[in-house]
Length: 239
Image (tube, rainbow, N blue to C red; front, side):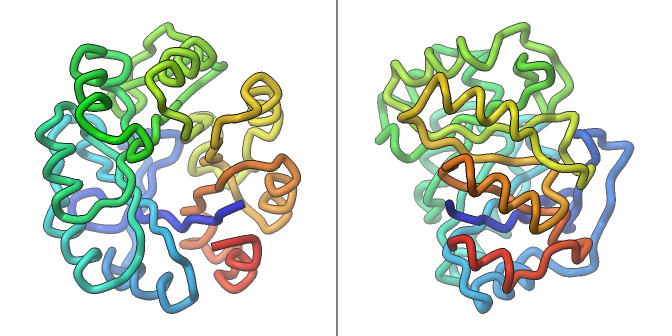
């Protein structure tokens, strides 16, 4: 299981939201590039980057930061937030982003989403499944799509996508533990997909329990910032 440190960016700063609520934002002193270099020096291969404002607005605001990270480090970057059209995907791939996380558009504009997947290698994409009670939420977790996570996995799998980032909104930023039961249920139904866990990780014990599920990866953010997990311990599960 890969362990992937996260850098969420809001107003140009490293930040974390609690349960996706922009009224519950915590800013951190370190710059995105500083953290990226720190993770690279620790031995991580991947970095999870999210443009929090773009996830709601649909306009990517951190392209210079992404370019800087790709220029100054050798990290592979998976990026999410605000992907709404094929031109954005082309620009992200051009600056070296390795995996693109697509969320809202896969629900709200299937024509454009299918165009994006057709024009590129499906392996370049991760579909974000941001859910509450197994129903997908979009636009920075502000709108309930009414679509179940299982119907959406079926739809995306038929397009050739096999990697899914699943976040339980009720857990995200809480450090209260991830949704082991949800991930177990998904993997029981879809044994061949690559499932990435996100949200709620608050301790090394949480990572141990996720490791037992045979997940593809886990994204860890706030637990690192709040020093609940040491980087040296986290990387031991896979980089």
